[in-house]
Structures are given as C-alpha cells and as structure tokens.
Image (cartoon, rainbow, N blue to C red; front, side, top):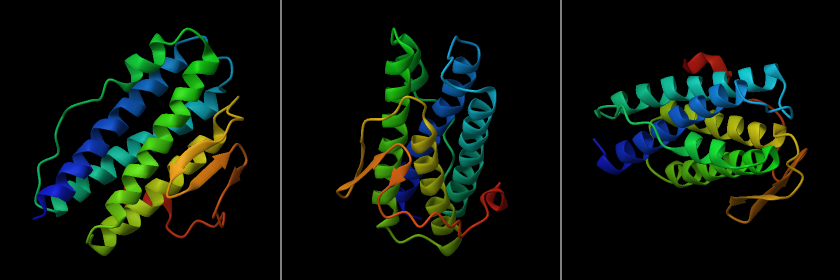
Length: 164
C-alpha cells in the first residue's frame, strides 16, 4: 500500500466530485455559453472519473474518502459567465498537473491506463470550454489554446467507458 498514491487519488476524487457539482449547478444557471450536451458530457466525464478513482484507491488498499471539494461554490460565486468558464478551464488544467505528478509514481497497469485516459479527458474538456481563447497552462511547459493541445495525437488509446 502506498499512502502517498492513495492520498493523491483521494485528492483527485474530491475534485472530481466537485466537478460533477459544477456541471449540475451550471446546468441550472444561465450558462448560455454551454449547450446541454456539453454540460451533460462534462458531468458524465467527472462521474466516470469518480468511479475509476474509487476503484484505483481500493486496488491500492485504501479507503475512498467521501469529501467533495468547494470548487463549485468558487465557480458559481463569480459574477460573469466568462469568469466561470475561465476558472472551470483552469480547474481542469490543475487536475491535469496533479495527474502528471501521479503518473511519475509506481502505478499498476490498470490504474495507469485509467489515469492516462482521465488526463486526456480533462484536456478535451479544457479544449471544449466555450469562450476559453486564452492559453491554459497545463504543466511541464505545456500550454493549450482552445482547439490546439500541444503534444496531442488526438487518438484514444484506452476506451473511456471500459473503466467505469
């Protein structure tokens, strides 16, 4: 059992739960920049990640924590849709940086495959954020501007829903 890996996975689980909450709150707000389909995909992606993270924590012998981050409160407290979308994109990029740090650890192949797919999914979500035309820093010197991800091959190696 690696306490550090379990702690990092639980941190991500807390963030992904908050991501589900953000999507639900934006769906009931006046977020005109998002289509219903975009919000649904975002919520499904975050929910999928929660399930995969729970399984990974259990594989490492840990206990999934039940906390939810306060990210949705921070997003919804912003006065304009542009600010909300910008923070949402930055939050997704923050998760990518956390995933990058986790990928440097000794992970079992199933967890590694899931985490890589989760990373790709978050990059897709940053890319899909409407009105996000300014570059978002992803870490390791990578940046992304809407529609262009540095180092992206565009090919999906692991089927997303196989980890749910």
